[in-house]
Length: 509
Image (tube, rainbow, N blue to C red):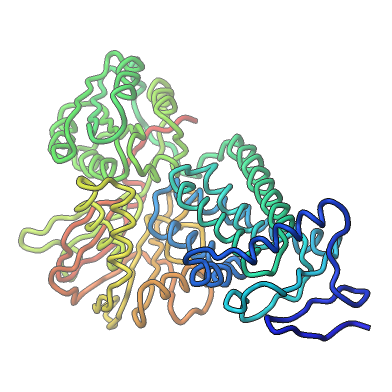
């Protein structure tokens, strides 16, 4: 008969045969001894922090929240690390729930001796071995650390605290936690191995149509403008060695736009080395001069080069030698109610994305603080500042009043759920990928809900559609807009559209 006795400190857990049981042998004795030692020891601050931390990690919600923050506001590498961390957690959780818990039916430890203040409000009903919380924490921390070691420095101590909290609150023996952590580390290593195999498979080029472009031997007739603030001196030296007949102009970030415009007017092919913002400026200069563009990824963000199928400078060098190029669409935003420009308004161009709302604010704060505290801390501080905002942007979209936290327009269809961009299959499309996160509530929960619901659901917080042209009006004074990672003050009204096949860009066959 199963026991239903309870002691003064909490519930007594029976085993399948009736009565509390510990594992027999040396492991069981060591486990119980260490468990009792933890129960007797008072850890300063532990009673306040560890039970709450253990509850926060229920169902992986603590780790899902961290991954969401990295996906929304982190760099491409951070987003990749967050994805692999969550995949590692999923593998560990699936293994625990389908194999671990049912193959070793170990009862939970008794709660005698564990102070009542440490007890969880709801006691777990599953078997004890191994610990699912420890497995999820270790898997997430391992997956994150293997891809982004800097973020791992923050995740590993937190994961260790979650694992320790399971013994501290009396719901697991130490061996349960150690076994779960080992399984989690293994899941992280497995996902990394599988991801490496996937990275080795080269993504097929998109369906862009071929463009006529000159073949340049050793870069003759090519002028490359290099953003000195992107990449390294070694990258620049390697580029000069690969293109000995090219003219290479190195200048600081604020002078790049002028250097690009001047170079485009006198060269056969305009080259650019930098991130997405620098490449967007180069696209504008190449369009104005009617010359092909050669891109050499060298910045923090290189979405355009990746979507084009260019992994590094060697790909572009090879395409230049062969005269291999394709035509890609360019996004455009033009001040004025009809998209024809105002008295002094000129069109802006984007290769990737245009946005209004929380993202431009994030970019502005990040760029403001980065010179003083570094880009990583600046991004975190900017995200904290933006998520504390209480008022969405009120404007008109296609003539209809809207309250939005984020308005996103992509140059082509981005794949992935929610408001955040992922990879594009091709750069040839004629439609904008428009996504809106509606206002209401606080921005953090709204953005998280939009991320989870996906672009094709009937979500009350998120709208997604494809348009040739988007008119935005009644934009409040001082509102910021962002395009390809750059920011500017938005006009009172503007039209966002596309120029299909407007730009010839080198890409290897």
